Image (cartoon, rainbow, N blue to C red):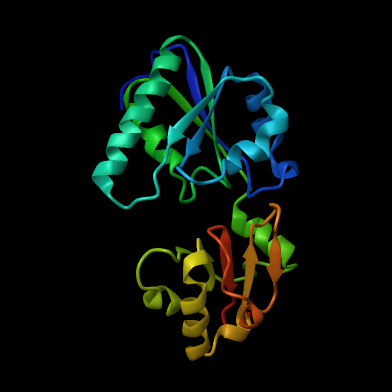
Length: 234
């Protein structure tokens, strides 16, 4: 990593799961003072992050950074190199750029592709923590994520086989579960764990669904779906 020598600064701002009231005071301050607001953009998808922060960014220039939903590492690298070039051009001019990202920027956030590259180019960049979706979901369910000596395992359920993760003796958060809900429901039923699972969809957003019993959940939920599975005797 080279020494930060430029005048502009990039902030990766975690804006929480959906409710604007869950933004931190620091996040709001940075959004108010930033010269440019950057946000991920995917063709055909709602600009969720910009909707959440709209009351804090009136009139500010927007930079929409393509963030395609693909696992092609070559394609992703090319896109984020392009995004980095655009952001660094603004930083070179002394601009402060606030990139808004759902939840917390350190938890499965595509923002980190940009953050690392900007630092490598010698510019200043800072991470601003946000409320993770699973914390907000547990609060909505009126339950704890872990107590005492309990362990917590966080898994992106949209990637690969979950069996090895489900075998871990821990309370589990299964993120991005939308397209896997039917299969996940059946897997937990076969394991005898379905009665210890709960579902939250679109936490803090319009259309929020809180389902304390995953066994009774419909399986037509979208991308922002999260399942919490408690370990036996939790």
